[in-house]
Amino acid sequence: MPFGIIVVKWDNRLGAVLEAKYPEHIRTTDDQIMKIYTAHAMGEAAAGFMSMRLGNLNVASYYSGFDINYYVALLLTLEENAEDYEDGLAEVAAKIFSKIENEEYKAELEDLYNKLTRFPTLNEEQKMAVILSDPVRLNIIERLIEEGNTTLADLETWLKHKLEVKAIDIYSYLSPLIKNGLVTTQWVEGLPSQCVFLIRDVFIARVPARVIVKKAKSGEMSPEVASEYLDEVKNFFRDYVISPEDTELITKILSDPDAYDVLVALRENILPKGEIHRILDKKKSVVDSILSAFDKAGFTMDLKINKKTYSALKTDVKIMTFFPEYLVEQIGQQYNDQIKPPRMLLWHLKALRDSYPM
Image 1 (cartoon, helix red, strand yellow):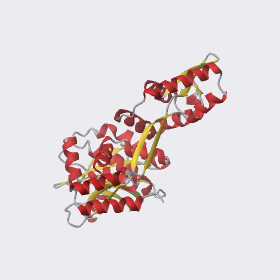
Image 2: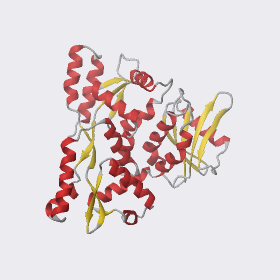
Image 3: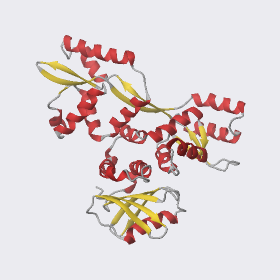
Image 4: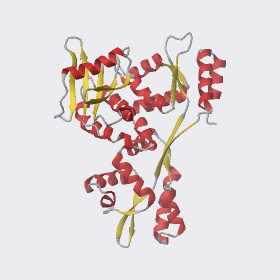
């Protein structure tokens, strides 16, 4: 179990400076924070993840690169595997680096740390949601869906302009996308910057709650209750349209461990609304808040059964990746129109071929 997180910046006059930490009682020495920074700098000062041991201290650290010159380090016991936190730390670091200028991240550090400590226990669905819950990363995916490929320099310039910032750690946003097989990068002869290629697309949407629908149709509910439930589901999906706002809502639910626990429980059965917290062994206030948010967003509905109120999952959620066949035609069009360097396009076709599911 991690026991703390620190945020450190490089000051040209003072050296490595501790900017923030959680919890407040943890202690690190100037020598330790300097050694972590030096380890990043010795690695050609490349942005990215690193793990190391300093005596009895086990460290997982993510560095921004020279433009921002910060690192975020998770402090672990010696028994833990620092690599288990790599994707989660990249996500947390991206959030922190985006709020460095006004120091807004300091008010969020406790919450970010608590979510990070649970990252190794998340399943693949949750981890993908964590990666895609960041709006900047979703913007990158949307641009690559539109263009298929770009250079790292162009992508960084575009993001700076879109976010209206002077510096951005592009690697902290790309690293989880690369590690999880959505994007790949490649140096292409004749181009001054690495190229970024989309090799898998993502589907994020609401879907019917399969198990609950089956229960309603099989007679496990009374005819009146089943009819009420199925009518609500049909009405919802008759008008449902995937939107960026709904995508953000879905990834937020899947990436929140407590909300996800409630969702999983409701996937299997309708449950008495006032008893769910006991079933899940969670605080009533936490579960009530989640159920309220679910109701407001149309994920759940109330059903009256024997004078008791039950919560039923009206819409489940789905997140999955798939091979982007449409890019093959898009690349051919880009080649014919001569709007992208031929070598870049050939490399993209090769990357798609190598990633094609056999």
